[in-house]
Length: 363
Image (cartoon, rainbow, N blue to C red; front, side, top):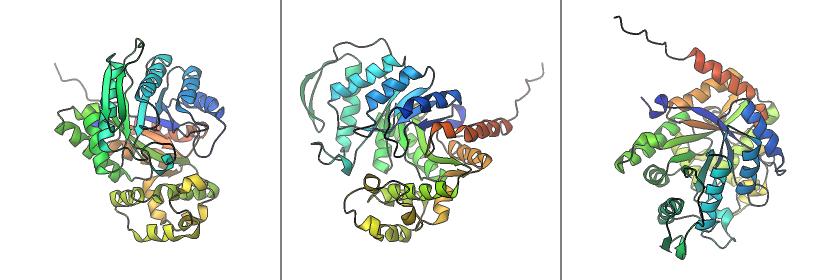
């Protein structure tokens, strides 16, 4: 039995998904998410309009029960003390509802004066440094994360430190998450079978590090669209382009899903994509702009790696991801106020497919 089958399994969602740049929309989306019973609100930090501290602080005060997590913010963009302080302050402000999800970055960080992609040593060291700072220690550090003679938080709130999560796709990152973090965040456009493989890698790494695999929570991102219109499906295909276009990242998704490389080669040769050079597609275009490029993606890729269809189809597909080993799903691609049909159908699905309650033994 998967560890996820014996623990809380839940649904969360992003606030300000896609190209939404008006941060005020996060408040209404947070209210909607809490009203329909979602477990976690996630923030994908984007410099300029989705600052993690500001958005998380605002929705933390607009809600009372839903957890709030970053999915994700890069390791490299903040001084370790500033990052530790941000997380501990949010944990205090939300009364223990915050989760800190970190990512290794990418080419979009070029020009900020930081290493674009965090090496494994930096990832390991930062996890240790953050935990030591949250424990009230003075930390002297010289390594890939920088040179700091004496770091210390001036005071600590009376709350437990937030869970420390890591975004991962490749095998080495998955193992790092299992060895050093409280959870792993998996990207979108993975099939349930791929999620099962990845969850196994994470939990095997945790066990090899003498940790309880059940203590490492697996969060899988699933594009979820209930009763999609033709326009929704175009945007879905365009969003897939942004996940598959980046070198290495796209190949890893194909390998995990068992997909052929030829369509990806054709996609990257499309004039809109080929002309980007090293620029990521989602930095130059919206998913709707990429709908034409998305027509090069085989339809079965999209149907097997997303939950897009009737509410009952979405419910069944979400349950497949959870049965594959995910502890929680991050529903992506639809704002929270449009997720109620899928969430309601999922609850009905879990009720109708719950194992029968066993009778107590005869006396």
